[in-house]
Every structure is written in C-alpha cells, then in structure tokens.
Length: 76
Image 1 (cartoon, rainbow, N blue to C red):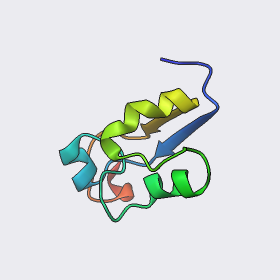
Image 2: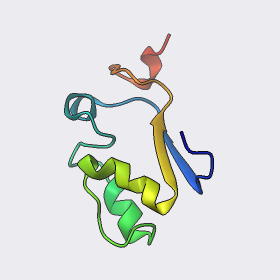
Image 3: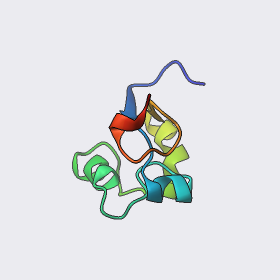
C-alpha cells in the first residue's frame, strides 16, 4: 500500500470485460486510459495490463466493490 499517492482513481465495480481480464477499465470501449493520456496525466496511453505503472506517476486505482455485478445497483 502506498500513502503518498497524488491521485486515487476509484471505480464503482469491475465490468464483465475487466473482471474477466483482471485489469481495471479493460473494455476497449472504456475511455479511462485514453483520458489519462489525452489529459496529460501520462506521457503515453497505457494499456489495462499496465495498471501497475500508474504507481510510477503517483496514481492509485481501486473499486468500491471488487466483485463483478450486473450494475451499480446490485451492491446490497
């Protein structure tokens, strides 16, 4: 665990594609990785399998619920 993060990105829960792949925002339709790059937060567009590299930039990533659910309303 790192306590010196600049940013902690927090998703609601992994989608089906991300849960299957084992990486955050793994669905090719998800704009998270593109947004990091185009927003100037990373020097190049990372791939979901490079999630651990976020730590190099002082960023962390997590989900409120770590298991796959059909929708954000299925948490209870």
